[in-house]
Image 1 (cartoon, one colour):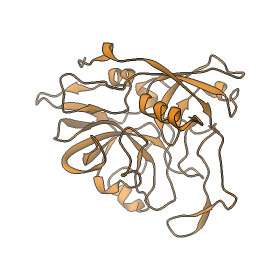
Image 2 (cartoon, helix red, strand yellow; image 1 turned 180 degrees about the vertical axis):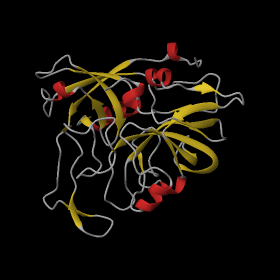
Image 3 (cartoon, rainbow, N blue to C red; image 1 turned 135 degrees about the vertical axis):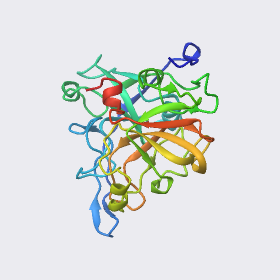
Image 4 (cartoon, rainbow, N blue to C red; image 1 turned 45 degrees about the vertical axis):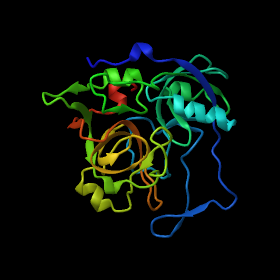
Length: 284
């Protein structure tokens, strides 16, 4: 087991509401070929896309699996984003599904929460969801050069992280991704919202073996320094989570949320086709 400061972490409650999908009066947006498309799949309750399902192929855009929650007060909403980590427990606090348990599986413009299918049938837009946040300030005590970004304590403990004989942190991932594949979101902080893969060049995805990614997959983005922003660095490694679906818009694609980062090669990705939240956290 890796040594962490788990016992020093603060566990706090935050709450938000299941958000309603929105579209503008003129909803068309151009895809990579300039064709107008109506882009759906964000906010609300998505019944048929869940962690473990494909990230590609949906007749939608930036599909958010499960339940998407947000708070109308921007200060509260920002606190929710910065405090919540993937793997945090959630529960329903209003409506017919009150008391039902879920788990945070990602962060987009909203938080993404997985609930069992029978619970989804009882939920409605506007229901209050409470999250027990934990993970902000987490440290891997034997790897001071590795920063924990959005990985909750239960994910860290169940992931299978281990020290290599050379003293690096070995992290199971389904694939490695070159830095030049990454697009929209480079301007955002690693603690707030994801960065998209650029998927307009499907041949390049196939070449790198990332054309069949699943929601919940853990991946390594090579040659990146995401400690305090998002940029290129030849010795850096970012471990990310594929948390929303593909996009038809230029510069966009499946979302990759930062979990662990380093700048000087402290992380060693280890390919493991089972490195998906659904299996690691027993979600399905």
